[in-house]
Amino acid sequence: GLQAQTPAAEVVAHEIEAQEERRVRIGVRAGLNMARLADDKAFAPAEMKNQAGWHVGAVVDVPLRAGFYLQPGLYLSAKGAKTELEETEVYGSQQNLRYEERDVDMLFMEVPLLVSYRHTLSDGLQLQLQTGPYLAYGLGGKTSTEWERMEIVTGGFSFRSSGTTETDTFGHDAEAQDPKDRGAGIKRFDMGWNLGAGLAFARFYVGLAYEWGFLNLCEAGAWDEGASLRTRNLRISVGYNF
Image: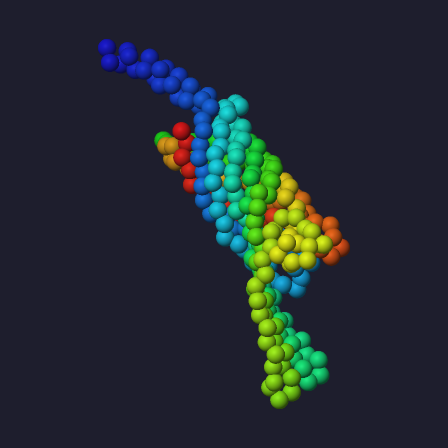
């Protein structure tokens, strides 16, 4: 009797598994951003560095065919960049020292539309690969600059000044009298491409993804001609699928 029931049990198990694969699922994601701005002379000769940020959001898995899913999502994503500049200029008996450190912070609302492929590695463990475009809109952010100047002349006599300036990252108003009201000259709208991979075990997910921003975010009139800044971001995510 027990052997006769086995094929039927297997059919039921396969049908349950097939129904699970056809289900639309919602997942939540959160994690770390390591962001920067690909710089073409915009901040020259400053050194460009990564800026740590975060992301949090939700995705929807819509089955397409065996192993393939459509995965739209909605995220809040904090990106940006750091720049550092140290310069020494010599004019005869005078030496000018200049130091600047700039933090560019940007908070985006992102809408990715990815295609995902799933491959089962073992019972409960699944490899997930995904790629596709994303749209992003800048909600806000600040750009702050710490600066220091020192002039040293013959005999060691020196003049020193330092300070911090802060302005909104997005937008630009060249007519504003106060520097903090002018804006850093970054455009709000961005779009790009996402490529990622991860592992799912039961309902839990961990993965890596990289984002390439396509658009030049330099506002006309705020930057030198030919300057360009494009977003780049490495994401480390953990999540849970319902």
